[in-house]
Image 1: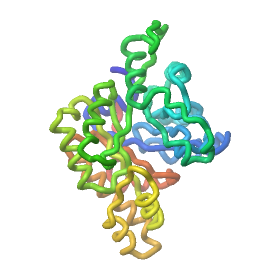
Image 2: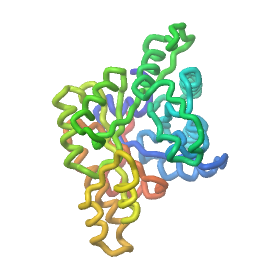
Image 3: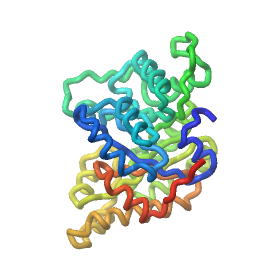
Image 4: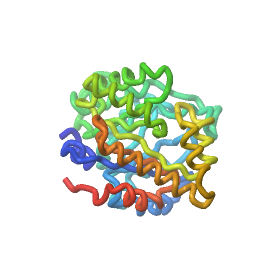
Length: 307
């Protein structure tokens, strides 16, 4: 075992993993975190705690992770390269491990120009692949990036992100291969709506032998509305929302659009359960945590296994 986390145990045991997401509040309101957490307890194997997502200032990921632990959730602590240099990163990795955080997702981070502080300076001292390598070096070699010994290495199950949809498509699987070579243990993908492209990417990963070295969790996001679908299609970089998805949502009564979005997500989850090379699903119910119990019931992923 690399970390002893519940997520690691679930994946190593061969169970179909199911993770969720919790966005910290735009303030120090602890109850906001607790309220979101109550909808996720017992429904997911781990929960992503986002790190200033969309470059908007929020409660720190490590603080919200500790609150999540108090509420009975296992956090997947996110860290972005945008806001810290390697000194701060390594310090936070040690601190997170010391406080019992056992999963970490290494990300580049949305560019600050998209957030509420566009004038802020992006750090990007190292990139997400290098961050993966940093955590692996600290954990497996008990060494800092500078070469000094670590007194008590961090116990972290290392995660990364993958986007099967960005162009050029033929290079996406090779980007995954770089993260595997750097030492990533699991990856969560971008929100998936183009299932044809996802099937092809997973097949390429299987053919290259990557799925024997890394656990792939497919990213699923239920659409709340036609407007949300159009926004993600037109405004969100790296997102691939086929017109068929929008037409399907438009084809139902306005009061039933959200239900149709959940239905599409559940259909995807059912396919991923049977897809060779996919080890689980990462459900991103964006600011819709209260719908997670319903989605898990309809997707037939309960009860969650205990290892």
